Length: 446
Image (tube, rainbow, N blue to C red; front, side, top):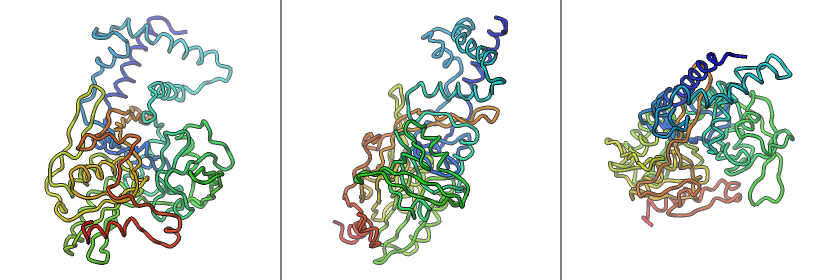
């Protein structure tokens, strides 16, 4: 067993290293979503790919993440040590960590299956610490999960079924299938719940682990048991995994001189791709423009602000509200390419996080109309912090975001100005009544 002096030194060093790593290392300054990343918007709203499918690098934030000065180590130590306004002392920290080290030594020296994996024990300690907060959007990503989570918003190729998912509920839930993906071809829909994989019950299994089971090499098959609202019994769907590159932006001219842009995610290249697309379409002098955010699960907060700034001239586009009650105001950036053209935004239950920031700002500012169905309702901001020594990252909820009018959409979603549903019959007949309603409003103004 370690000597008391050794324990004191190690306890203090561990506390400082771990806490400094978690709270001071590389806050993403972007934006879930989905999970909103402070430059990946939150994805708790995350895609089914070789993992999360979100490119997360130091300095980025998701639609749920504050680009604030990091909390200092002394401030954290005071909170952890429970000493209120008093400075934490080495004695405070020694006493705080005695049970931890006691347990560590017990397992390391006495556990029946030796040797124990100390790295897994360390990761388990971090995971348990975050789980103790009781926040479904605050979690630990091990190195493999973190690497995979970076793929989607970078537009990188990954292997899986191609779907954005929510890992925070009782079951892994489909937010939206990616366009042209195996998930879409198999008929998966927003709000489908995965209750079993290859016949194995997923009840009580952590959402991240469930997602990992769905991912896999291209050409292999996975059988998902789906629970769908309105369908009496669960049913099986077999999907062949494929290599998938997450799309960013697609644009074209429709009949009646209407411009149409489909925004699939809020990633590294989205702003550049959107500007290029807008330049081409606006050169056609369209009568109106439709921005399609249906089944867009979110991405970076910074990208969301860039996107909405293409359509809103100036003023507030969202607020971030923090635990102490303070707010940070985000305003549109000047120089947008489509700030005057009549605008309609399409949303549905797969529109989450960054998508809701854009749609909410356009609706509240009276810039355009929302057509479709109630959005997903992802209204918190997460900060991703890469840990030292390539030990993954932690995702911590740091704020909630509000629309310009102060509306909280977490768990509620945005209500369209014109509610239009798409039925199974519409899909089978290759009809899109939501798009048709958007075109009608642009042509008739009603």
